[in-house]
Length: 625
Image 1: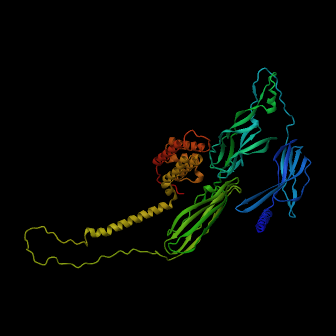
Image 2: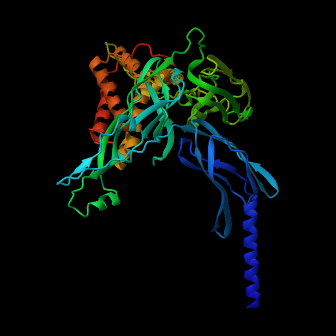
């Protein structure tokens, strides 16, 4: 028993030591937390906190515009966790102040200093906006009457509840990203939302940013008034055309919890409890909509546009590499091109690389390693080519130019990949030749030796012996293989030219690719995943129309698509029906509920693509991408 007690004591000491060690090992964070906006005469609280056991806390002098009511009030909290036998401990030490601001403007809460294990740490200062407060308290007294009725408060004023769409920029270049933030501002008791109608963002390519699905309210000042503000959505926008683009209103149905005052009857002794208990409440529906916004989209310069520019916009960088420079024939080489930085990486297409004809090239395999952020799309896009030399020799993968427009400088920038020399030694299967067999001679055999009777009249003589050499079949054995070989060479050359023509390949495969995407959309439909269904449906439509009409990413706007459809002998009514259907899909993607079921939309999508596939007439010359 004594030994068991000693073991338990040692274990406790070890666990305590490990917890203290883990606590000391963590980084010390010392900061201040305060509201962003307060009103004059309003009591508010700010807290200095450190995630360690500190001492000798001292704050610098506070500005004269605030009066400290209480503080610093010290408090400590800690927690211990044991997961898989490992114990971790965290603690927070806080110093709380209560204060009141006496003057409008911006006040700065000073930095503070605290010591942790003999080392001093300093917090950053924090700026608080002070607006004019409401010093007049409104009191409403009720007059008695014989009947008890519910008297609702006045209509909710527009200034007490409204929504806005805030743009990070008022003027951008075509293809340059900006962020649209959809917010609700309230000074009433919001209980919920009945219907949300997001803007369609026509003329933009949009990508939703990560925002919590639970709307939390923060304080902000608008025109000197304090509002509770909640963010519904943040959207990264890429304008696809230049000129004045209009953002449609953001519409919202708000459910407000509003107090209903009751008039007291003079002879009702229990009516006094209504005031004590706060009265009753009712739900009021308030429809709000943001004003339409106009964005000025500047066109990209035309006179200085390089030939290697294909729509990339942003602050980008180009790199390339090969994994091997010395191989044997029929051994693969991986050639990689990487575009990285911040910009419209989603629209960057593979570079046009003129590989030597004796190199068999597969790919590229595209790796999208980027994400949408408030600063734009950040990350990289990688194109990986598998190159197989079929014969020995020295080959050069040539350098290729890549250009993009940098909005920060207002200029085009160009970078080039390196050129790579590939030394290919003779390997297995190299220089395989086909040897045509020669005909073997056969000895002539005498089939008859006797002298037969000589006829003197006219007779038709038939040669009873037929020889293969010199016969029609003999010559056909040469002609047919040569014809087949020539046809094979013609077919191989034709397929090779078609494979080099990316536009023609995409044009031919547009229907199959769209069918695969529609099959994926059908899976989302069966699973009831509405957002993924409409996103996959729109990707199928945009991908199909881009491949079928040989369009660049920057050219894929609805107006331009309509013009191209008409050029391809599609009637204007059918082109308008196609654009209208895409608008309905984009609206249904963000609308809480759509007028038509996903099954109806899916059937119409198949019919739309089938009609276009059968009616688009192939032009004599396909646009080369």
